[in-house]
Image (tube, rainbow, N blue to C red; front, side):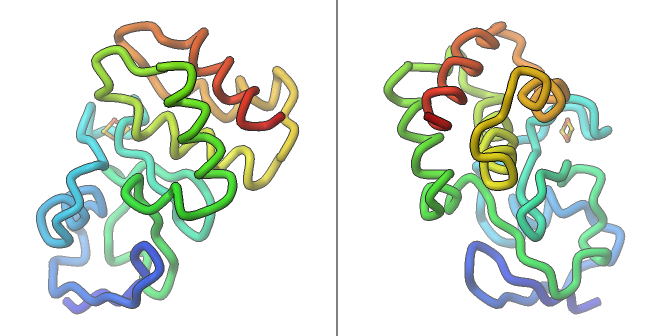
Length: 150
Ligand code: FES
């Protein structure tokens, strides 16, 4: 099945099974390995991308369900204003430890700031609770998110 959508600002089409998860279309067919596989069940947040601006778990998003929409991945998120500020704050505060979850963390943080430029603690919790970090960098993630919002 041909699936057409916008990927990082460019119209694109992939001839793939409709039930193939977006995560694997990005990694295998689009050659974009920045979006990570963690649990494969929508539980860890490692695979988070933006779909029409909202943070979604690409591991449980069948590519056939996104026709015509706009997908942004970690490879291009810094081209947006909130993405640039989030990436800059992440670098400045040296947030990652092993780094595996950080693409997903940055995508969730950027989606939050796109919709809520000055989030309060509850809004941060609501946006970020589903992004797990086995190195427990949560304090630095929160500091960087607040720095990017300032
Ligand atoms: Fe998608 Fe864990 S790999 S939520």
